[in-house]
Image 1 (cartoon, one colour):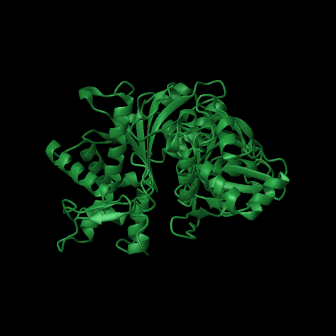
Image 2: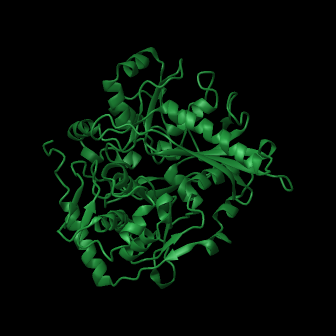
Image 3: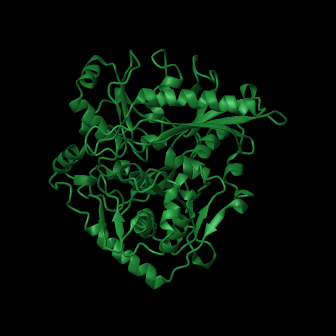
Length: 522
């Protein structure tokens, strides 16, 4: 491929928007387009997307990104070798095999409607909340796809009907997109990858196949589930009617796993992605580490059909950047997300205000679906700058909670520490452009935080996987730090240990105030 222009495309389908980015051989973006789509909130705690709107957002992004790259003088038509796909995980779609149409809106990962199903299973199963952890690494929680599928099978007549007729297909967003991109009802491929499958609560972490015992216990037929493949292999070609028909789909990863590849996280290295939520993963290599401190055992990546699987410990935080959106859209304290840094910098501290964004409960390491948001420590002195700073601090405190648990679980044997015994946290995602947020994070951790020059490592990770599958890059090129590290920005802690300790104690007190609030009267 030397001498000719070579490109890899990346579909990045997130919780609030879809992007398509075209990378050249040096992994530099030469064209991109982004489209936001609608969030639906039918009831308190419910969150949905329209699968058809997501599909159309992909179509628009691909077409416009190709047009932009072509207008910039790049011969994308002849140089595009493959595309990768990365997506919001756990979000669940059911559709008709014969019509190709969704049978219900997509139920989003943060949706909490399955609480009663979770409680019922916890009471009925001998292992309670952790009944399936040994097989799939995940506790019973509203977070995971299996519970969303059970709700759909129990509550939606069209889903029940399609099941009886053998016309039902189920999948996470990657599966929905791949099926449509490769032909839809005219022979589309029903595929998922190991990382997305690992978030359904239905895949066995050791065999990397659907777990028959879990399926039988939950009453889920395997016929409605997709085939599981690795993260880097040619899955199939894009079908007719799409802007880049004939191009192979050669990489697929859930968004947080793609970020692990984009950040080049090998065994013992961790990254934190700050988006709608925040997600911290520590690569544990080929070893599955079961958490005793509220974290999830999950897949990191498997870069090829014959490549070894790398596993991870993960801490998932439901509300991070979404709290900033709440300040903007629900309270009107800011007009754009970018304004929060300037507003928060008008004060030197939060003035004793602590905000815990438990809007739909708390994920790791607490796992309390009875928690609800609180803002404590408010006095007549408090102003909107204090609240803005408390919101930023809440994101960082939650990440610290997860990392503290991670350190305990890894028992320091699996972590990579730099000189001076420092644990280095790689960060990425849209919120990391906020320098104050990154400094607060370093201060609360007491360790350096490293932000790459390209913070959109999720899309890059999917591109790397696809490029690896078709020979554009080697694994050595992807995981070699080379010049990339020279362009990174490092934030180092500046506050005293005693100050850090007092702030953490206050945060823990605030978290304890969120428990058992789900049944407050309306």
